Length: 221
Length: 289
Image 1: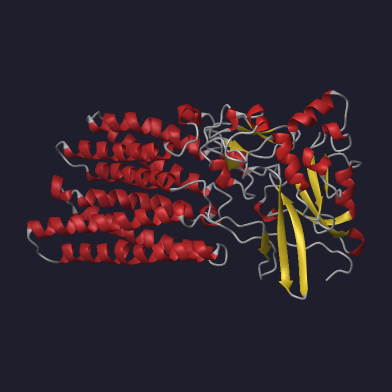
Image 2: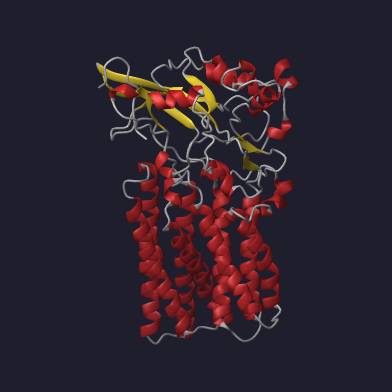
C-alpha cells in the first residue's frame, strides 16, 4: 500500500512563504485562499523570545472528519490517502469546513482577482467549477498521478512532487510514501522527534512536524 | 501575520469564530427543532377536531422554513438534491432523508390517515435527533463536538415545539394538565442538560465562545426556565379566569420557545470558535530550552 504524507521540519522553516506562493501559482487559487499557509508563532517576551514558522493546510487525514460529514460524497479519500473533492458533486454546504479541525477548507462565492479586474493570467486560469464549493490542498494530486504514470517517484522526482515541496528553499517540506520504510518521509520521522497537529482528535493526519533530533530523546509518538 | 503564543503550554494563534455557518444555518436548527417539537406535541395532545391537523401542518411549515433557510447558505443550491447521496456516514444526508419521509407522513397525519399520527411524531423525533447529530459531527468546533450537545439540541427542539403548542392554546382551547406537566418537566430537563453541557465545556472552549454561551445561558435560566415554570405553577395552583389562563399559556409558551431559540442561535453563530493551530512543541534550534 501507499500513503502519501508530508513532513515539515520546523527547525528549518524560515517563514519565507515561498510554498504559499508556489501553491497559489500551481493551483491558481484566488486572493485570500491559501491551501498552503505558513503561521508565524511567537513565544515569550523580550529578550527571551522564540519564533516558529508552521506550514499548515489539509492534513490528508486517514480518518478525515470532512469526508464522513459530507452529505454528497464529494469529499473522498483515495487508496493512497489523498483526500479529494469532486467539485461537480459539492453543494457548498460548508459542513466539511466546520468539521475540519485544521481550517483547511475554503469556499469562494464569486470570482476574486488580485487587482479588481482579472489579469490575463487570471482570465486564462479561471475555473468556475471551483466557485461556491469547498476547496482545499490536493497534495497536487494531478502531478502525483501524472508522475506515477510516467514512472516517476513522488517526493523524489520534482515533476511528481507537490509544488510547495519543490519550492521550499530550506527543504523544510518533504513528501513521500509513509508505508515505504525507505522513503524520505519515513526516514525523517524515524530519525526525529515529531508530532502531528491536534492528534488527540484521532484524525490520523498525514502531515508530520519535526521539532528535534531523535538522538536527544525518544520519539514523542 | 504574527500570532502571539498562548500561555498554557501550546503555541499558535488563538481560536476564532467560524465564518462558514451564519444565521441561515442557525435558522435550520431553530425552525427545524421547533417544527419537529410541535408535531410531537400536537400528536401527544391528541385533540379532537381539526386543530391537530393544523398544528402538524404548522410544524411542517417550520421544518420547511428551516430547510429553506439552510438552502440559502448553499453555494450551489441547484444541486441541493445531492444532499441525499451519503446517508451512510453523513447526518446531514440522514436529516434530508428523514425530512423527505416526514413531509408525507405529516400531511397524511394532518389528513387524519390512521396510523400516520404516530409515524409523523416518530419521524419528527428522528428529524430533531439528526439535527443534533449533525451539529455534534462538526469536529472542528469544540463547543459543537461535545457529546452532551446531542441531548441538549433534542430537548431544546422539543421544548420549543411544546412552547408553540402551549402558546397556541388560546386558539385550540385544548389544555391538559398532563401536557403542561410534561412541558414543565422538559423545561427542567433542558436546564439540567444545559448546565451539564456548560460544565463539560469549562477549559475546553475559547473565551469568546464561553462568553457567548454564558450570556445565552442566563437568558435560558431566567426567561426560558424560571419564568415559564413559575407561570405553570401559577396556572396549576390558582383558579384563574379563562382569559387569564389563555394569556398565561401564551406567555409561558413564548418565553420558553424564544429562550431556547436564542440559545441555538448563539450556539451556531457566536459560540462556533475553532481550536486554532496549537502546536505542542517549539522547534529546537541550537541548544534545547
